[in-house]
Length: 287
Image 1 (spheres, rainbow, N blue to C red):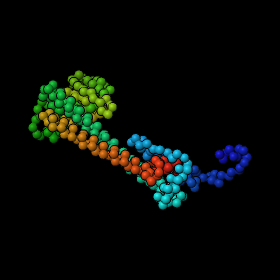
Image 2: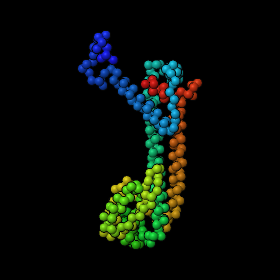
Image 3: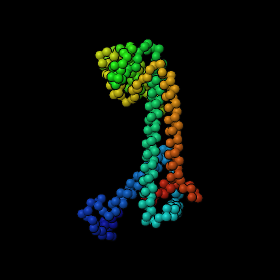
Image 4: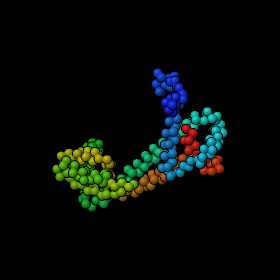
């Protein structure tokens, strides 16, 4: 705009801060606060959309002005102090929503891990008749703890189990075959988790020659989970406990998501307005 007026010869502008850096200008900090507040508002609006909360805009500038005046009255702030109040509210809202979303994601990932474990235990249970006395491989720590105890039964043939992405199964088999020179057998059971194709694997091998450590390192190199398998006589009990843990975690997840949705709705909805006007849109227009 300044360049346009200057080109037309209508105005003459003097840059009084020619030697100053942009971030040192008088309103530089304020402009950055506006940008950051707008980013936070857009983040909160996206969180609303994720929760299927529809955000409606004011129908015209007059409606916006009326609601902005009402917000000034509610907050008991003068017009020139309103931005600071909005900036603080939006900052606090973003902090809470980010914390809640992080907690929900942690719960969801924990449920996925529990579901993986249940699938592995269920798969091992199905394979027990074919294992014929083969025992789960013990960790190195477990071997050290057992070094002075009773000798392990059938220690030569063992197995490890876990989960992996379905498309990685063939690569896992090839790597294990090469590492053990064909002295290991890999079984898998495919399943779907939250729209993602995964597979539970069970690798049977002889522990002679350090095969166990090689196989465990190969399994751990993939994006998945490798689980310590309990005593095979306790699989039914472990399955029941896993199902109960998954149920409780899903209940907690549902409660957390409902709390977040209720918070977002309360945050944006203006129940004092005569029509459906959402406060977050007023904030966005104002900023």
